Image 1 (tube, rainbow, N blue to C red):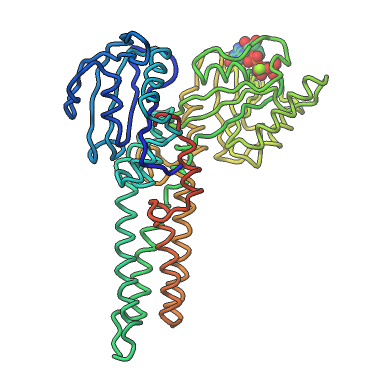
Image 2 (cartoon, protein in one colour):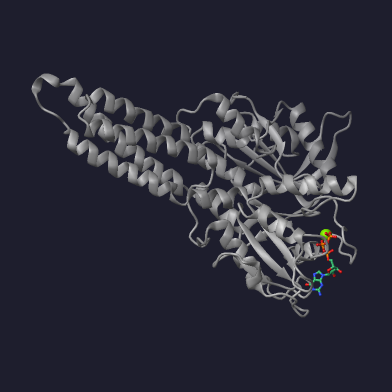
Length: 457
Ligand SMILES: Nc1nc2c(ncn2[C@@H]2O[C@H](COP(=O)(O)OP(=O)(O)OP(=O)(O)O)[C@@H](O)[C@H]2O)c(=O)[nH]1
Ligand SMILES: [Mg+2]
């Protein structure tokens, strides 16, 4: 995977047709290979969009393939840090793959997934945290996800990690100096100061971890399953939340059998909504399977929306669903408020503060409240406007390791342990920071990270 000396090529725009499509070349041969494809005698002027034609010279008579705009970005100031040429062609998959084939015939190799960004990282253009942000930015499905990813790319995490590393390095250097000159009876740093300094650094790590759960929720999104007895309006509510008619709605009880899944943007959270058959005694094998699937969906969901029908009496099946969902985060949606109610909300006997919202899935009344309540249930009431810097579970895991190592160092220093022990803990914390930014990251971890990119990124 790590062969940075050859020249790679790939289509950088998504598969399918578009007005434009971009083929990207990166590596020492980028300019020469582009030169072999273009009908120009002079090399491309750096950073100038140049109109040219792609010519297939592998045929007996050379054939013009497309008119393109080519731009060369010489190293080291390019995206990857290598020589890069971007060829902006018409966005036809046939055309773009022809250009890639011609580039390969001229000496380029097809890029692996994420290899352009991997090179940017290997050339020091991005650290690992920023490289991961590129993937997140490309994958974002809500504007909030894009914002968190872009902040990360801009260096919000990187800058803070660097600062932590600088402070740790300073302390480690002073401790090592104390070890190197023990005979002089002079300590470059006293144990009391070590406790204070390490405590302060640990405080900064913990501050970074503070909004991490929310960050992760934003980055990864979550699943919300809609449950309730037949005919209460689950599918209607699902459609209303999505804003499109996706699931079948009929007056027949037991309409939905399978799980119906769709992603929606809930105030920036990418929520995978799941409409289900609900949890109820099954009458036939199909329904039995549907109920089993609903239970499976509940098992992995971050929250449930329990739908109750206000127009008819509460049934044992309603109580069963309420009981089964009691341990999970949930919103109770009391549906069909457009018709006269046949029971009072108090008769649910739920604790004060339980998230109960009255809605009409048919008219959309009460949905603003439902969305708001659902978002609060998912985020524990925390605002999504100030976005947390840390959102990636790899980062969270490593920062937790840093905090643990610093806690151990603090304790060792406080109990008067020898400097060597304190140092060992501090080094452990520092190497977790190095793994975070990619200064020292095992190859298999790198491989895992870059494999998740698409080709051309
Ligand atoms: N008046 C009124 N009727 C509703 C409302 N929501 C749903 N309905 C009606 O209730 C019936 C059942 O709606 P569905 O959305 O199919 O209910 P469901 O819970 O998905 O039903 P199953 O899939 O069979 O379990 C349909 O006739 C809907 O039009 C509402 O807010 N008000
Ligand atoms: Mg349904």
